[in-house]
Length: 327
Image (cartoon, rainbow, N blue to C red; front, side, top):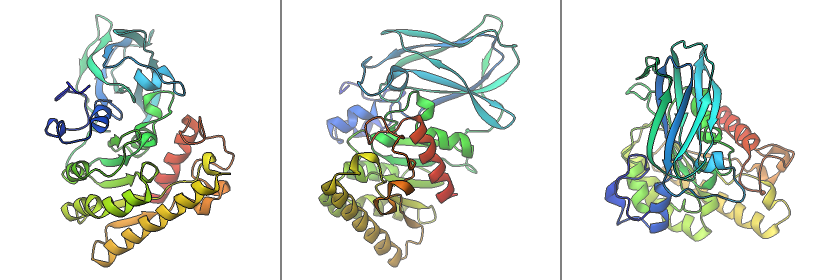
């Protein structure tokens, strides 16, 4: 991965290659959150793609790690069409056959935990693939994206397919593009990343990184990371999202203590910035005092794979929670 300087489907710009930590840079080669918007009158539609790493994970499906999925716009709602299941170093898979051949708008999500070296959309010989005609999920000056910065959960661990990561769910429900800057285990408020995020035109910035940070990281890094975004975007909401309550911590008293200390310090920073005049910053409590009955991923402990990383059910609940609280 360290030889990739400016891949087309990467999430950090080339000028950070020798600045960012190697672990962070490698994760930036994952295509999490990236998607292709197009329209086609295909009767049969599929894709061929070459994964960057072609690896697997023990707690996440291959379709989520290195697969694709496809949605179509139907009466103003994005509906699932099919999954591109990876099947080798040069994967080829069909999303759907035997369609009517009517012109439709599509969005195809790229892998969450792998990268893409090259990609082709395949259709039947009588069909065309064109730029979208409908502006839905197409960014513009009047419809800027939401930027999410965070952890493995933000990146999409452990959705069964790319479209079920919570930023992707939110973008379809809100009809607004999202930018996924989740870096598994590496959402540590690196100065270089904060400076780059501050330069992205956005309608909202959601900072959801506490589960990758120690209390010392929160104390030492928040000042520059968040202030850079606030100063560059004084009229855009900046959301400091707390640790959420999840099953892993349920019986772990030390984990609960550390979580609550981080949340308290994060909230202090939000209040400090607001007192300085940055009224666009907001602390959002997703912890609910550690009460699983009020957890944003559900009261039944059934929203995760391993007590932390969410299933599709957990992601759907989390997306609904954030939409309710933020919009």
